[in-house]
Image 1 (cartoon, helix red, strand yellow):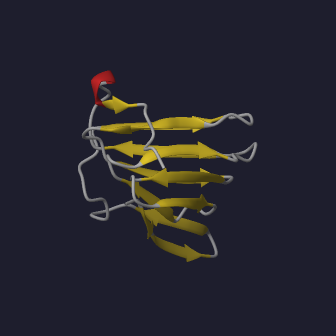
Image 2 (cartoon, rainbow, N blue to C red):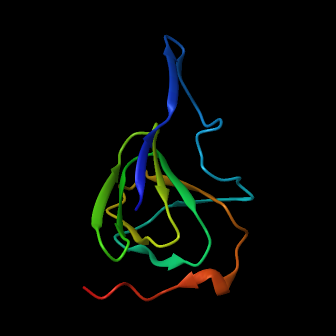
Length: 122
């Protein structure tokens, strides 16, 4: 099941520096980001192999995950929150604020054969 990590952040009078260094359980050959989202729902799939780390670096959004046994919503409302999404997690991203920027680091390069668009039956 997906899990939320708190990333190491260093803060002082100059601002904040958040670091991702040896926290992710996979190497990152692909990075993409989602922004300018209206009231649409993004995602709507799971994977055969790909693991992902989602960080809302600006604004807020919600990621809903279902691994076939457990359904859970994760509020990504601070740039030090990192959601690890496992391949079996059917996930959607929604409730984006207008200023939201969701960065996703992926364990695999894009492969359309890796996507499973069917959710689990309840």
